[in-house]
Image (cartoon, rainbow, N blue to C red; front, side, top):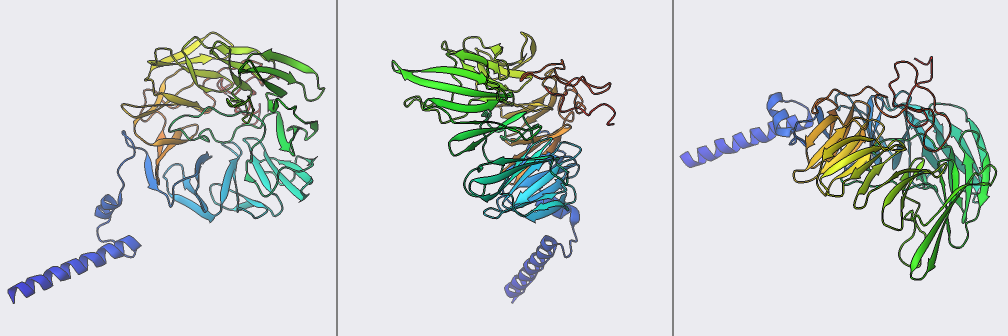
Length: 484
């Protein structure tokens, strides 16, 4: 009898505990909030700990900082969380999403696969700002949103919008954009970014729209001026050519097979006049594979610069606008990240990373590293990853000062002006710059290379007083004078 009584008591306790756990899990009643918070909390994804850490519904496909919100794209839905606390702000069913706009005017485009149209949402509230029922493709930039709608396969209209605008800035006719429904940011003829281990390809968020875009349509490339919507060129490549639009130029890249090797030549033309602006021979832009010199890839580069390899194996960064050599590597060095301002280079001895300012012979900073180091450049921070121990470090791209130093196996998912989002599996967390590094976080626009001309040509805006000196190569990251 005694054994039966003890079994009944034990069974009752287990039943009661199961009931309490069920009530706490469903949010009906939680008698031990602190205890439940401790039980439910995941292990920290970094050391030092992040400002906040949350488990999202599915493994993120992309994460973007949009003003005061973090937009998380998953397989069948998109959600936004507060950048300050990580609390969920809203959630929508969607097959794809993309962020347009800058820190002050971001919007989130969402849509469904195989369904025309999209919605533009406010990233903080999830409210619909604009709805379109006909577009088959959307391209998102920091200062522009483009969409295309087609009445049939050879009759399409391309429209440009201010990210929060309600009427198009311009429209242009294109004889198609591709076949089918293309969702967000289908490929154009530009450059391929260098990739970095444990750094998401979209870590920098939307970039400013380049001056010209190349739309591939039925084997031809249509070059569109993003300021006016004019279609400047409609070009068919030659048999040995690859066409790419970089830095305001149309590049004709030729790869010819002879004597068991590939011979490369680049001719850059002004799309408005058709005149050749510059040319180079013998530079491999990594567009061709080893089988017959067939060019199946866009050239490597970023924004207005190209990455080339000389016949002696040395890497170089080339200005897409005028063909200048902005940087040429020493034997044994390896270019691991580049943008319009800087090149991050792994030294020949594989023991350090060196940041060089493009267009000068100036070394900005050097930091120790191993042979496994990778990196990515964003407007606000250079993200450096290393192994043994596994680290994720954000530094000021101008000075090299540490903004965040993390011992973690997580990936860098998004970088903003004041911090970055890291993630591992379904866990994401926010790291505030200055909280783990040796220096306070830079204000937006702090640090960089001013000047009145930048790679890619054209005139940049002189920063207004108090802007800081990193407004981007074209001044796109700084407010206009008098805008507040």
